[in-house]
Image (cartoon, rainbow, N blue to C red; front, side, top):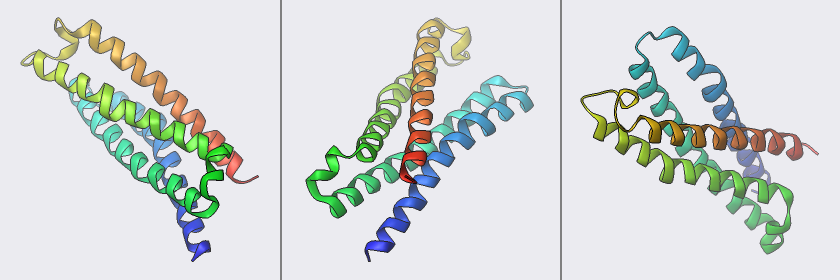
Length: 150
């Protein structure tokens, strides 16, 4: 059973980090390149990022619980545990903090596109913060993958 939980942890880590990279650095750039309607592209990208965020919450929670089950409280001192905890925290900040505010700004801007409304500056600021956090999350994911094989 211990091997099964470790195999599942490896698969979930792969899904999470792979999903981050595939969505943020492949799918979304292609979407904005190929879709002339930037508002539609933004809406679709937002949905993809939300799904990757939910995936991250599930995977991060499992990875933390699995490490605690295997190593007990000493897991909290392990670098991999801390990396996953940081990734989960960043995911929660994006999903539960920044994204709802951005969605609210979009709704308040209607019928205009938020980028052509009075909320554009605030939206751009939040988008920038979210993008930086996503980059940090992606880099932590790279470290997680590398460290998990050592």
